[in-house]
Image (cartoon, rainbow, N blue to C red):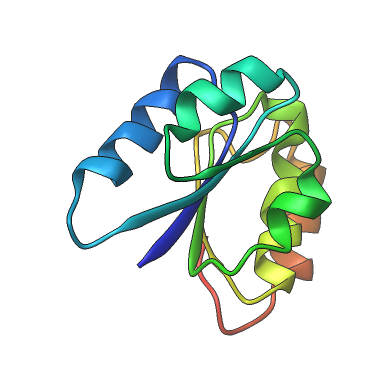
Length: 112
C-alpha cells in the first residue's frame, strides 16, 4: 500500500516511521510547511514536499493527516476527492459545522 503523511511534527514523523518499518507499505511522500521537517520524516526514499497540491498529486492509496487541526479539512477533502483513503488524527474539526461540511462533501466510496 502506498501511503503519504501530511504533517511532520512528532506524531506525523512517528506515522512516517511506522509506514517505513512495515514491509507491506511504502511511504510515498511527506508534506509539511517546514522543509527540513518534511525531509527528516520522509527519510531517504520518500518525497518531501511543502505544497499540499503537489503532495496530493502523488500516486497514493491512503493519506495520514497529522497536521494542525485548522489544516485537516483541506488535506482530508483533497485526498478523498482524489480517491484516497484517509486516516485523520482527532479531532476531525473544531466545530460541528466543519465536521458536517466535511461529512456532506465526502465521496460516497471512501471512509474517514
